[in-house]
Amino acid sequence: MNFVDVLRDVVVEQDGLPKRHQPPKTYVQEVEDDIDDDENEFVTFIRAEDIRPDVTAANSMSVALQEMSTCKGMFDKWADELDRTAPSKREELEDELFSAVDELRDQASLALESSASIVRNHETFAQEMTVLLESCANHPKGDFYRPMEVMAIGDSILDESDKLATYSMQMQEQLDRVLVLVESIRAKQERRLLWRKVLKWLFRAFQVLSVILSVGAFILPMMIPMGDFSKTAISIGATLAGGAAKLCKKLEQSEDEEYKFNRMLEFLRVQVPIEAERASNSLQVFQACHRVLQVDVKVQQGECVRINQYDAVKARNEWRAHRLSLQQVNQAFQRARTGPGYSY
Image 1: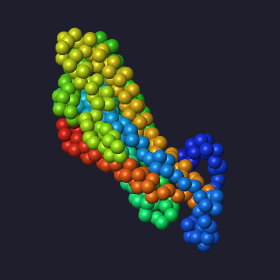
Image 2 (image 1 turned 90 degrees about the vertical axis):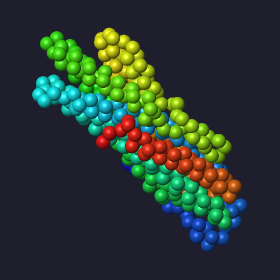
Image 3 (image 1 turned 30 degrees about the vertical axis):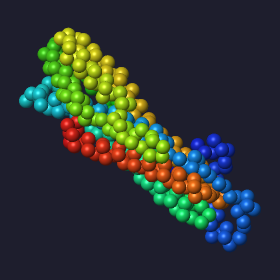
């Protein structure tokens, strides 16, 4: 099932529209019929409010990218620290732990790349909407033609959203596997030496993460709406990086190894999966295109959909501002990838 099919089901439920449609009547046919607008019952007029972008989307996607970036940065440092302290000869449990952490890092990388791809596609979607509305504004009657390019980008976003859901779930499952291994090592009394090595590794990995977080390695811009345009501020919505930074400070203040481990375990088992899933879900929300599809359904039914020049220009400006906001998020993410929080 493609993007149009999925979203059309939403529209059908909302509007009670039939699922099968007649081929759209073209503008040329209407001209040949020489029917006045006032007498044409199939003409539907839309306003800017009917097709405006979600003004909170850039913020939520920025936060989601930060959360996924923190996950990847955290698991990168785990793997790096394991590699740095790896003995020449490892026990079977150590080999299993090394392999599990490497796979966790790979899953986090896939989830982050999929997240970044979704945000890039949203920027392209906004650009295509800007072009479409510019054409409507310049059309003598304001005809709203079928947004095929927009729908194609929508397909890409839907496909990538499915991938992200899978990668995010696999990352969380792999994290749970790593934690089960760590706890099994802790429970084996005959493995006390190995346990102390694992505990030292975990604590050292969090110390490295603390340094990275202190320089704002995963901070991306937040867009504060200002009329039809936006300005950039520092995002304060991400909770994973902030939670990790607070945990690191608490670990440094304690000498109790059991306390340190229990706090790290709680953070990894509870907060990381919650925020990763929340980030994944927020990147899969695509309300703006639901509204655009409602218009597309009308066109496919044979209705002539039009928008007056004032509303077309207004909607175009909103989508243009939305694209600029997403562009800033994408550019900030690309710059952040060259910083200390990422390793490849």
